[in-house]
Length: 405
Image (cartoon, rainbow, N blue to C red; front, side):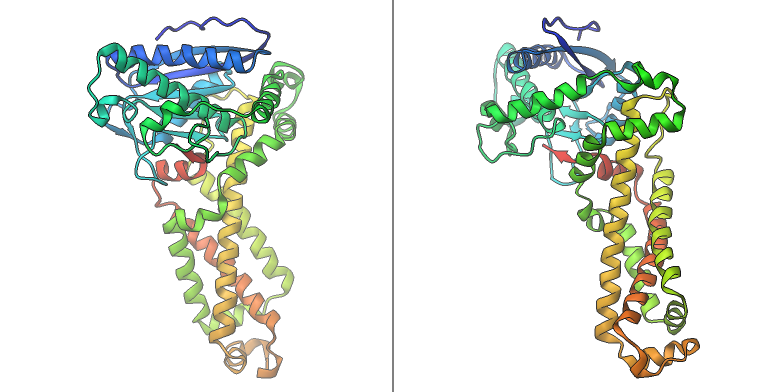
């Protein structure tokens, strides 16, 4: 692939990086070049007010195996994006992508990182046993990769899936589905154009941000990109965290179960003030969020240059983990409250909470809630240790990959 920018001829600039990860044969190389040109031409026709510049980088040291974790390539993509100040970055690999939410995937994209990983492995006609000439094979791979690039970019710009098989945002079940995906509604094009206008604005580090302190730069960048950050947090589907992060959930639930069965835990919880118990809940959320982010190295970057995009990535990661911890805590709280109400009667609670000097008639619904808050908070703190044993690549996939195509 060429290392220089490919030509375009409009006004407002949008820079897109294309990282070629790992080795490619001649057919794949030709198909990638053709796919980039096709994508640039499609975007030029759809958004004539913007100048789309594509930049290519070779990373032959990446994804040498037959299968690769998308999170590994996304991390490299983020580093290249920050270093070269691209607006978006696509990583293209000949390796098969390891999906978590599905048995296979053609691509994986990340709104927090403004990046997508695309595999040519499954879109190659040979993968389906179709025998074509070299040029016909190149043309088909190029078309499908181009469709995946446009599909990914539309998602990164905020568009949801579409159920129409001929629509660009249809979720393909087979590589053949990509051949007919091309339709985009006028209102969807307008929404993408609006998002592109925001992307094309001057970066904070290129203007007034140069004179700001690091803290003020971070606050300002977060505020400017608040909508993008909110969209990234929502797209991460934090409500699925208890299911996705099984070790964290298992450790947390086990802790809550042990606490509910322990007289000393009830005594300790009911002897505390409401302020202390709720303060423990807030502390648990913040402490587990910071611990998981630090332990899983979600904010680790080789380049120390501050950029607006790096702040958006960091803020999105913090928000996603915080939201995931909040959902997990809420699930633990409900578990503790329901189990406590149905299995532990008031005389038993009064006998266990000896230091509170409660009679059976004194135990109220508020006491069960207080125990649920206490056990959920302690359970979340213990469960965060379980997250330490999750694979770092798996955790990054859960946090950053919000769509598998």
